[in-house]
Length: 624
Image (cartoon, rainbow, N blue to C red):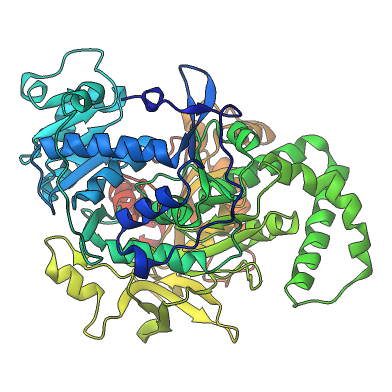
């Protein structure tokens, strides 16, 4: 199936605008996620629900709630013809799209359990998930999956059907061909199949979401309809969302933050969702869509921040000074608006600074942004300060898949950008032993699939979920993450160092693309660093060395200069929290190699395994 088979409306043509305010929907009356979908369709059938780019027609197209509902029925007929029973697992490996929503809603309405896979996940990881979940059906995107389909589906013994949105360009292996179907044919062949009526309850399992994790095999988080629906509802109470919000969706829908915050929440609000084409097209899509809500992980904001700094370097000293002034004055205005600072005379400069500096930044984000949500990892406070100072409304939150996922978030009326905000209404949070952040609510997972031992280790007898993150709380109830219990580095002298803060400080420099601080049980800290290739060219030129020669990265003068560069960004850290040795490289760590999670977090154990000899060499001098 392609997007065009849905008979979408071209943007600006034939769209029946919904003028009425958002219909209020409540989990008590909705019951399930499919109940939410049915209620939304009934409330606003002709309102635009989704927008995505049609490559064949080279235009953005719209889909109304009624159109999506009609497609859901077609997919339910095809799923019913497969003989799937309530509780059976069905997997999907798609990019963000209206097809993702259609498949999810079709499955949920039949009592099936959706298992989302990352589009660019490693084949061996996808194969493990399919087999572990006993998935009976897999929906894939197209050519990228076709090339690796034998590896992805080969060991999934329960997999009876593989459906692809597009036909394969080349033939498939015989054992796959028997199970393979192109969506258009599969749907047409099921026309007229009766759709069984299912009476579903809120505590029914809705999804198995496999955590990417930074160590070991992923675990299947069991989330119910109640878990996800209530988390979306609680999140909807944390801002004054208007009736005509537009979300731009680009964080993978396999990520629970995007699924709850960029799919179920907009459905609850009656908002429109536009699907970005790719990260590479994000700048153009922001201009085309002009979203009011953006949900992202810190890495996207970090990249945008780097581009701003690169642009300033080319403009000269005057532009850099004006930029710093705009951030400083804008931050003072923000703090005054939050009731934490008084008016000062320099704020009279804001109209000029907004026109000359801040406006160009907000316009690059579409010019209509009301909320830029950051979650999934810690956002560097300095980067948050820059964006907030320029008028970009960033709200950092915190969550984890096991909590569906949002636990805390900042509010427009109570925003401390360096914190993860305050608990959602209906969500309990407290600080336990070792400063561990604990949470309890109706959003907590049922447990880990086929892993009762891990479930008991995660959720205690009183129902508190142990996050593994260390936190503190201020007088106003804003929580701040201060470290990760398992990631704390303990040096041989007993000093404890949370590496995340140091890594965030180092990554403020555009010269550094990726970094991992090491030193467990060692006398001092060292770092593995991936350099930004473009900035490395300029840095090498400043040292009169050849950036193309692989041996240059092992040059003692170069390593010493890079170490000084790192030290500059760590000057505010304690003396024991300094980098004494580092190992630079140019080849980035990737998801495909298993060194990053699909959400771009460094898999510390896997990186350590890869560089074990290198790390030992950085401490060899001390040992002698």
